[in-house]
Length: 266
Image (tube, rainbow, N blue to C red; front, side):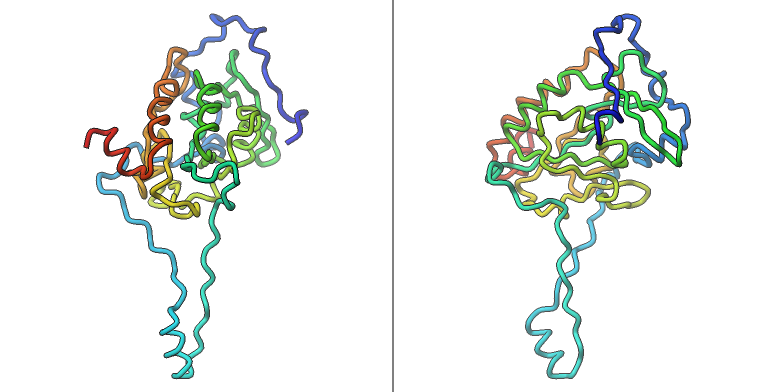
């Protein structure tokens, strides 16, 4: 999206004290229906204790089945394998673990309500009307992304619409840490939630991680998850900074399941 469409707020023009906003003022958007249509909505508050097993992918018929069908005069339609959500691994990322990273309440917090100390203001057109979305960056997000880009193949995966998430990511990730961006249409809608099915990425699950504040987003693959607390406006939050040593350890893992179990004390 062209730079003229997006306005970046100059923070030095805003007094920090005057710019502080309460958590409650950021939770409620001006229009709940519009907000839910735009951002990742319909998330379950708590993940089920026993996560559901995702349906197995359709398998093409075996050679034996094809031979038997041919002998019986039966026409068998070859099933094409589902295309992966991610392209082939770049040469610079060969051998690296793939980390899927959420956007809202993980890296940023956005609101339709004006926020005087917003890092970005992104105009988004919804049903013919342009709305201003005010975006706050989580503390230490720049340092976090820079280091993650050095250690991993990083993929943005959000349940939000691309018309909002893409321009926000343009402003947030100016160094190109995210190799690929996936949006709501790449999620699986399951029991009222947008689930990020890691098996569709085209990556070895033993070498794949997901960082997300919503357990409902990774209910298919909880053993691949590094949970992160939801963030709204706490200026003293250091969650991303504290997670860096954890990801430093995980970046050297041959199998993320084994290393995560060790880190969890299992």
